[in-house]
Length: 512
Image (cartoon, rainbow, N blue to C red):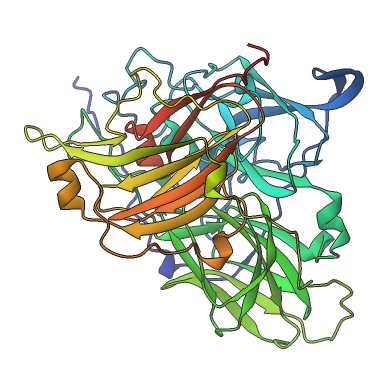
């Protein structure tokens, strides 16, 4: 008797326009609850909270009319549970890897660090934007396997800001984040509290990311035509999720709200605006408050960038207003009709931010962003300073010194460049002749320097570097000595070696 073998039926890709829009409410991620306390490793006379967060597979309902989606999560939901603390109030987080041993998304075993002998269910969590000791930073090669725990100490000695936690595993970071492994980390402080900004239910964090879904509700991650090397250079989805919901709505009162926006996409850049073209105010960027609110009608956000905005709905009573990005509907606000008392403020001055002077820098580094096409197999390689990941560390700033990094973009893409540990300021962007650079290895500028956008004048940890431009950032290396990384936050680029380690050396006379 013959046994018949049937190929598994794969559901076709979903067209989100076939779904009823705005039928699911926006869900606010739960705040994590401590499991206990333990001595502060930097001050043993004090005790700090301990959080135990399981990293495990879960089913997440992204739309009323779709089956639940298989995801890998930080705490059983997408986004994961939110960690929240006050500036200077440290915590310990035990990230417990309870993932399956095999991945459900396509691994490219030809990528560095993703060989067939490496466990597929590995994880290592990075606090993006955190001033964190190197041992707790989530170095890409410090992953743990299912059944093991990564213990992290987060001092939170930094200004109030919207940070986020996400996986950083070497070679599969793009897959783990696409699968759902990211969540908010909020730092608060007294400076922000005194401003009387909208708070409580009037402060809404929104993680926005794009995905490709099948009609059965499951994630689809695209692959190249080569089964042995499925990596693709970028992934763009047509399903835009807001806190894990597709085309959701949010009931709002006719008053001011603070929205804390985060671009959690692998590669998509957003340009947010309100459908009715109403103006709003940006009050913060990656690393916290701006010096003053910036009025705008469109807000660009690259992958991993964050921005806090104030929208005043008081003149929109009874309206339904969409938040959009170009042709995409993101979510719909349902504005109440009944007037309410609004005691919150939008101050004209937020938080003084002295601009760093170039004279403060002890060194200027010129670093290239590179794409290399292999002429034989037509494969694409992505590099920083034309140097593979495994080569010796070449950037070794000294703790408590300031450097200028000139990021020379030789590619045809915009790259959001993120440096771990530090915050920095953008000095300017200036066009240059790329052909001349390839021919003579010299920078010949072709126009004047362009100052940063007003919304970029605060402290940053991720900077958009545009093609044919030299983007200059000025970086105080403060916090801790040790080994960290800098990389492109287009996750497909990062996984294909557009990432390099750097080492912060101890200050003279400081501890080794």
